[in-house]
Length: 114
Length: 111
Picture: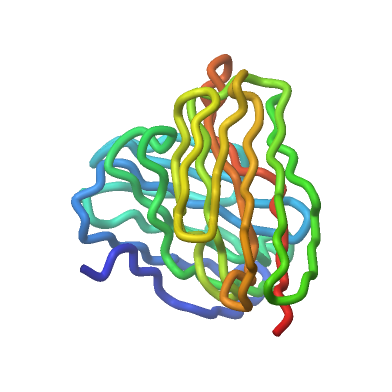
């Protein structure tokens, strides 16, 4: 099994550009989440989904959109990139409640906005 | 606001030494999990502790959940360079039931 696959691994954007970070999992997990990791701030939840067609906001959702049309895929869209969105982004999945099962994480996308 | 505070924040030790890292909160947690994150990779789940006082062992790593389920510790015996990484605790408090990550302990084991 590939687990959780994120693409791209690295990306540089100019301020105002938009892009989509891809995330796919092959474990048939219902729960999927997007986190950003910043020095001194830890892992912060951006958006999450408890199943296909269901999404909700996390702690820091502004400037990001998500959709969940299939169980496997959970893309994260940056609408108009800002330097404050420079970060490492992680997609994670869980077979159910993360408090019970924990997450399987992808290897991350390092995004720089200039 | 529920918080998971980890200590120490940074730890640099020699190969073969023992160490303990702590994860503390003022809230009661239904369970706590520990992850290890290596540079350039995502966190990897190590263990879940559920019952107050529970002790779990994973080779040289020993995890304990506090009796009151407000804290946890990770003890590493005879640390090796391969143990180097960022150690994160995580969980959801009984009151807020929002899954959060701790502040992290960055461990470096020198050969």
